[in-house]
Figure 1 (cartoon, rainbow, N blue to C red):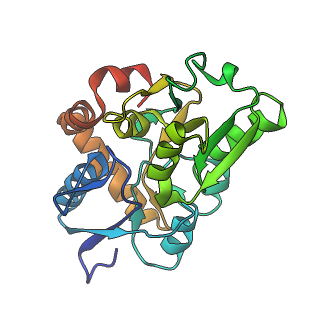
Figure 2 (figure 1 turned 180 degrees about the horizontal axis):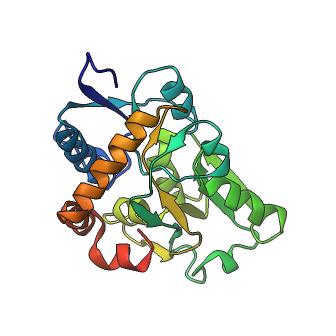
Figure 3 (figure 1 turned 90 degrees about the vertical axis):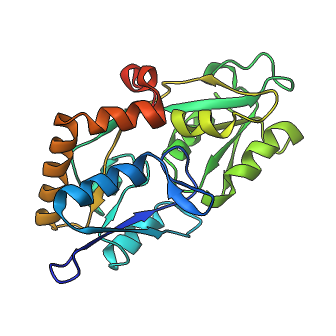
Length: 241
């Protein structure tokens, strides 16, 4: 964000409800409202810049290239990502979850029941290394990697047989399966992941500004209100959102 521009350009991989999606064409969701509030505290305009890559990790290349000033997209902090961007203080603790079509696999209630089964993940999602490890350990049969924007196909495949389970962050997966008969989230809390805004490496001024605004929003109750509205009070306190 330049002083001349006075606009906070937020990179986001839509759709990823309830963090970010389009509601009647207008952006909506937790990260949308949160970063708008951050921009207001900072006294700058707000702009959403959609990331359209098929591998979520490419969003960090776009950040480095200056396509946006920060990333707010339900983004988990990992050691590899810390090597590509600077992260603000976490604003949420989340975890991976598992969904299945219970009419196809009534006996699958969690990762301990995945022997011989194929698990779908999105390319570049933090679920991918978890499932790769399960396969390597013989605890799952195979992994099927979908382009990041093909999560809908992955969920369709649960019922058609293209895959047997899908792993993704709990609040997102819970949202996405709401209107799918027989598809349920059967396990949450598979991992513990911190979610935070990312800025370009070395952009200390913006990182400190966002963190200061975040503290203000925590103190005045805005952050708790948004967590309740979009993620559910119980989920955030339980560490599964």
